[in-house]
Structures are given as structure tokens and as C-alpha cells.
Length: 386
Ligand SMILES: Nc1ncnc2c1ncn2[C@@H]1O[C@H](COP(=O)(O)OP(=O)(O)OP(=O)(O)O)[C@@H](O)[C@H]1O
Ligand SMILES: [Mg+2]
Image (tube, rainbow, N blue to C red; front, side, top):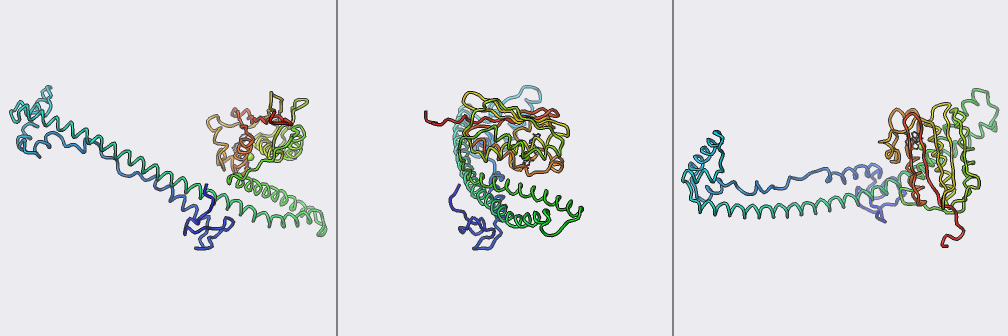
């Protein structure tokens, strides 16, 4: 990743927080998309195929006519003779045909064959050299494209972050006035107005959550995840997450339960981030479980770490698509996107946060029966060096 960022259009250095290049005025988001396509173009273009040795070495007949070792009409005769022999099921090589017709003597033929073998060897060596050169050129092209793409990725992550921050400001005003309205501070509301305000408030909360997710995502994409490790009491953390998700679970008619080991060991983790992880997993579990289903959070002590699982009795995920769900903006299908909502960033972030804790997230699922997301966190040790 390069330290300074250049405008993909004019190449001048640009301030990361700007939306338009201060030098050429181009919309940086558009320029990034176009530059990305351009950077990928050389990868898609396949230059001409390398020359094969058989193209480089003339066939024996051509070779001999070029050197006046045989006349063209004699070559035709030899070729016809060879064809005849093939027809009657007794095929011979062209050199043999020339010999049998007395068009060439054995010694000349041997010299020609030897010369041809040498030329073939040279042609092979030349083809290999060309191939090596092409591999080298392609590798350089790919390296160039990769560098360019990582630079563009930084710019992209900056836009997401800048725009998300910009969205936050008007949203804060909207939220402030909505709350004043909802609490009757701006005059009494009738029932239908109150209902309307409630709907807007819920939509505002969702929007706020999406913006927070985008900010988290762009922070992590820019390598900006700083973990604040501390001693974390998981029982309290899990109970807080369950409290936060329970209104949504109630609305979806999902039963939520916790099964936590007695004396659950404290862990070494970033409390806010793990809280966010749990909320994402619980949000998914509730979202992708039909009415009347169950969601269970389990935590058990292991030697040196604590395992946490979020288990649901929901729609499940096909085995072959388990790795896809951790890709950014990836939701399993168009219809479920529309049905369930979301941006498809939750699990991407979850995985990055768990990875940053030196652990990994595992998932098991059976279609129509449910899913289980599991990760472990290291037990807290007051003196980690010992
Ligand atoms: N518990 C689950 N059961 C079934 N499918 C799931 C579950 N969790 C995740 N998925 C699938 O993985 C996809 C990606 O999940 P992810 O949390 O990243 O995105 P999202 O929930 O769709 O949106 P966001 O979390 O950004 O609001 C989901 O859209 C869904 O298709
Ligand atoms: Mg999600």
C-alpha cells in the first residue's frame, strides 16, 4: 500500500478526504472505477501466442527445394508417391519416398535430417527464451496492476469513510428533532402522527447502524484496526448483547437463550469489538431464523481459551457457499437480500476482528436446520509473558 495517494486521472497528489481532485477537478470515485478497469485490462488481453517450433522449422520438402537439393516437380512426385503408399496401407516418410524414387541419395538425406534436427533444437531453445521473456513481461504487468489496484483500494476505502462521516452529520440533526417530536417536546401528537414518528425512528436507527458498519468497514480496509486489549468478562458482555438484540428477537418471535459455563474465565480481548461481533452474529441468527425458532449463545471454558458459539435453528447456508458469506457485500442471493435487508458487511468485519485477535471464526450449517458460528478467545492472563 503506497503512503501517498495520487489522483487516478492527473496523477497529482490528492488530499485523502477530498471527493474531487483539487488539481483536475475529476470526481475521484468515478476516476477510481475507471482506473481500476484500466489496470485490469492488460491482464485480460492475451498477446499473440508464442511461435511453436514446427512453425519455425520448415518441413523437409520445403527445406530441400529452398536449397535446390530437389526440384519442386520432383517434390510433387515424391509427395504423390507417399500418398499412394499411404492409400495401399503401406505408409512411408517423405525422405524414404525420395530415396525410393531415386530423387536424392542417402548421404544428402542424412545431412538434411541432421540439419533439421539442429534447427529444431535451436528453434526450441528460441521458443523457450521467448516464453521466459513473456512470463517475465506478464509478471511485471501483473505486479504493476496489483500495485495500482492497492492504491485505488485505499482511495475507495477513503471515500466510503468520508461519505459515511458526512452522512452522520445530517442524520444527527434528523435524530435530534425526531426524538424531540416523539417525546412531545414540540407539541402534542395525535396517535397516527406518533405511529408515523415511530416508523421514522426505526428507519433512522437502521440507517445509523448501516453508516456505523460502513465506517467500521472502511477503517479496517485501510488497516486501521487498533485493538484495545483488556480483561473482559464474557458473561456480562454476552448478557448485554442479548439485552440489545431481544427487542428484535421478540418482534421476530424468536426465543433467545444463553448457556454459559459457571465461572467462565475472563478473556483478553477488545471489549467493544467483541461486543460488535456478538451483535452481528445475533443479528444474523435472528434475521435468518423463521418465526418460532431458537437462538442460543453458548460459552465454555477450554484450556487457555474460551469458546463462544451462536447457534440458530434458521434457514441454514449451503455447504459449498460457506466461504462466500465472509466476502464483503456478499449476500447469498438477490431474493434473500430483498427479504432480509442488510449490506453484507457484517461477517466480513466479524472475520477481520476475530482474525485480529489471533483467532478464527468457524461456521457449520445444515440447510433448513440451522447454523452455528463459533470462535475462541484467549483466557486473560495477568502477566502474559509468564
Ligand atoms: N445465521 C445465518 N443463517 C443463514 N444465513 C446466514 C446467517 N448469517 C449469515 N448468513 C448469510 O451470509 C450473508 C452475509 O452475512 P452478513 O452478516 O455479512 O451480511 P448481512 O447480514 O446480509 O448484512 P449486514 O450484516 O451488513 O447488515 C447473509 O446475507 C446471509 O445470506
Ligand atoms: Mg449481518
